[in-house]
Length: 366
Image (cartoon, rainbow, N blue to C red; front, top):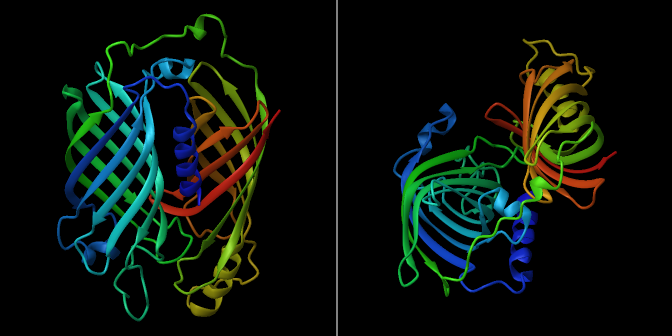
């Protein structure tokens, strides 16, 4: 799963750091209390109380030793542990591991964190013992959380405080049904501690923008993506999901680039679903031989950090013989450039709030 891979990458990056100054590491612990957002009617019976939990995080600070660090106002990166009591017996409890970035604003008093990882649910759907849990179809699942906090570090001998809002998303990414997911919005408060903070730790600015012109000509990209998913019919089989795409990208600055392209989808699960619908619902005639392939065109934006970048895309199906979803689709994810020409990617393809597949990709940039 992409979250396991991302977490391991972050953690190995932390452990491999050498010659880091004292005061480079912090830890924070936060308690949160909030509400599950009723985004679908099918989970409203599961919202019976206010969920609560904790997030414990280990962070490595940056001081501008690399150009990207000063460009993004010296973010932190690290790893998080998350525990959440869903306050409903059918939903169970969640345990999660994440890799994350902390970005700072307003004289470093406002911190925004983006965390991606994997979560374990103690009580997923079971048709005999837990048929009420329509939110989670399996124990392990992708998870994302966002944190927006007022933060003060090193108020007294390394101790600081923070408080604000947190949003936690748990979803199977349609790898197994049911997959209605949950979104928790909560308030949090906690403390942080800076290890061995020293006054000589200063922020450096490397003015690479005055040396390099990040504007680039058009580049052509070929990418192959794959994943595993299941239709909404509980108990149906899991099938591979393939995507072959090509697109043009144009980098316009240090941080930004735009994309435009087309892709061919091979959703194997849809072939089985069409056959099922033709038999199970004769009152709505479905030809079992309907082509299940799709073709889409899309536009996207890419945010370059270092070798890693974040991307978001919006697409439209121009060929869709069987309309199982809306014609618009979205993809959010990240890329890692192994070299100038080769990159890997992980992303989530969705139709609005409904996830279709978690994709792993490999691509070549000409």
